[in-house]
Image (tube, rainbow, N blue to C red; front, side, top):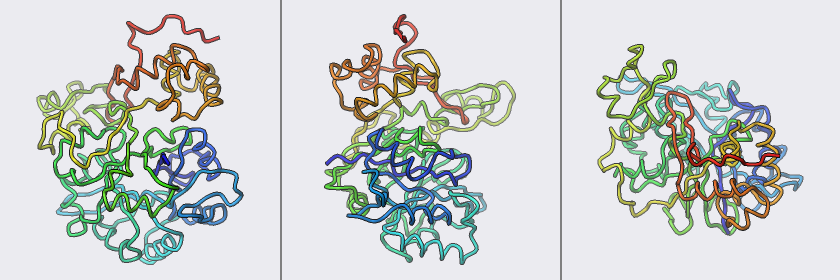
Length: 413
């Protein structure tokens, strides 16, 4: 069966994250969006760990609400921040960890606490530990634990980040590189961009929402073929690079990511890599250094052309625009505008969000939504969109209708 999985998110115990991120709320929103398997997030945080133990139980390879109120499956996960110095350079990397069971979580909590790391201050704990040493420690605790470098290209906190990362997986993890089976592409890059680096040909590219609120769950996701949701099967697929079971990833249009292009937010300036180099990496308005984005970083590390052939182990993918954003674009309103929310809720009475974005035909969509929205969904599926890239922490903008062909009368009421 098709399993849609979003395996990187946060709880309400993470900084700058919504208080609506409770276990029951996450399960409920996943059902509405069509997400079958989701990460618990923040599994190392003592308070959240208690809630996981009180509310979830292990059944048939995954964790489910004990009260049976949701079919959403959970696997144990957390993001961690590793801040340390290597080769006289400060490194700031985020990784997603996946655990087979609560026993492995508890052993990890004890080991990290005994080493003096504060797991209480943030759902995404900050630790002064080298990434290679962390992976070694995790495998000694339980060889089934997985570490996946998070949002791998983000400038400030990623394995390939322009500000504090490395130039390769081997440089970061040394002899433990063989245990890195996947990286997370992040919102500002997509698989084609990653295909430009031949060193990633044997690495699976996974995609997750990194949601800081329930609303953002599923903005990126993975599609697996499994008999049932299962941590062990998820791990096996990554370890064995089973393309027959990892069937697809669901991606942002990478231009929408907030670090796609180079730029300087204060001066509202952005540019492509070539222009950035001509400017010496400085803002032409104020002279300050630009934040070098994902597009430039990929270009710097690439050994292939911008439109490379698909590698043998590459997973197919599709770009999507989150449904509220798409409706808002059609209506020319904000995603949280009343008219947008009303239309969104009406549509979800008929299908899940992923069902709407990925599966339903035009005629099926027309049974419960406006023709302009149905057409917008089809344009999105075809990649027929207009983009304004994100940069230096500012999200980009994706339009399924350019101004010249936007419907003049959508009929909101």
